[in-house]
Length: 186
Image 1: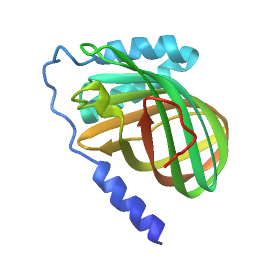
Image 2: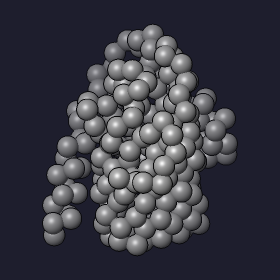
Image 3: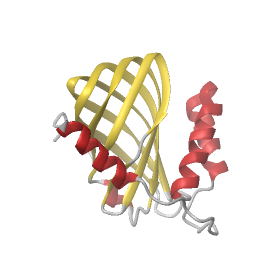
């Protein structure tokens, strides 16, 4: 019950009113730029990715950064996630990033995924090196595609994953970004 209550509180905290259409700032990526990057990165699953990008854009507006990378995760009630990739921005250059984090919930199995993370309200590239919490759910039977939202310090990170594996469940947790790889998920 405690887990369900915590998941509800975190899910409510992630909900925000749909963004009003605003002019695109010079440091933001348009939906078409994100979709093009995703097509090159994800390949054949780009149609599903395009609809997820459009949904994220309608809820949070245009991102001012995105991360392309790969990750692996596994869980048996408690779980771990590890990944690495590159943060792309229009006006502050590119930055190599690594991420890791624990999860807790009714979650079982493992998966590997190609991951695109849309980043909103990033004030500077080193601000990504923080913890971002949220609620996630997974349902992979051989393969799958999904989106979640993580928040921290007014920054929103929206991981879009195309993965393979066998995984089913829901969890709460966080992702911690670091400039160097580490095995410590905390």
